[in-house]
Length: 434
Picture 1 (cartoon, rainbow, N blue to C red):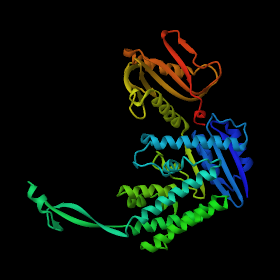
Picture 2 (picture 1 turned 90 degrees about the horizontal axis):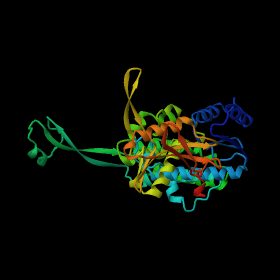
Picture 3 (picture 1 turned 135 degrees about the vertical axis):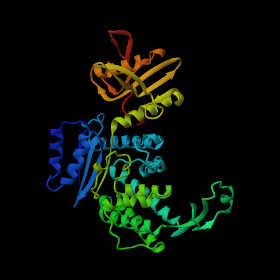
Picture 4 (picture 1 turned 90 degrees about the vertical axis):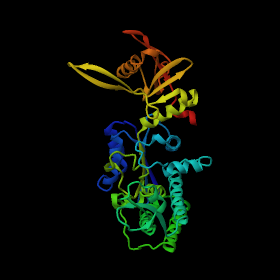
């Protein structure tokens, strides 16, 4: 089997990106894949895209800007997977990292990293994907092993007419005698859910299980999937003729079936994850999700990940009670300006405010490599944020992924206000975790 790697740098020139993709991909043949990848690149996302065509595996990486492309394929992949491990570690550690609080649960990938981190020494995205699928399939199997085919749940019911069993205790306490408290039993039938998941597993086996070049990994994924199919057929009343498509799976109708209980919402998140939709509820516009079920892909915003990374570093250094983060504690401050004779209300939102040893630091984290002096807009924004908090004389700090040697911890004075200093602090990308 042949593997073709394509490495693309974050914010790389569009013409170079096009040349790299078309050098390895036939646009006419891989139109869907080309479109999906291009959309993620131009939306400033990083991640990977994995798919198979015949006997050729395509592995496309959009790399964060600090990873040097002038390395061997193996060195780039190892560095990228180390980066992914940190991403999932942060997602697992901080619940508010999820931009949409639709499902108050960790994603399955995050859970898989929690469980295998000690033994996880992956140097290839194929092993990474294997751990992901094995964890998801195990979660699905555990759900159906632990649930009966159906059960009755008692529910309280209030009406002005008698329909169900009277709740005498509740009626004695009720002052409004037009309300008749009753109790009813509702059947929760898991066979409907089992039928959908049966269709999910069939689709997964048909479209996704052969994404593995390694024969041993492929067999293990196939055996696990087949075992779940057999469990569903044995334990539940399953409609074997049910044909599932990705559009059916992500429809409002399907979601309504799963959303009634927390456990079934978690199950729904698991089955979505089998098709690369583990961050389905993080997306503000689900039109952008990858609908090609023959692929496996993960993409995310690197600048948001970097903010959480800096936050993690800061609370380890200064303790959580001393650190305010815009995404968790909130650092907002309203202020007013006169704009063409009209008063406008704006918001100052520095990334962090750190209080330590009677000193306050107003901090912005920049997902940038600093080659020379900082961007004037970055300095002016930070100056304004400090001036709005002048009652405690904060010190301004800009944090970059990397700074050119010689700029580390230099100071740039603002001539209009000599008390304002911008300290440049370097956190060496993600190398500290190596």
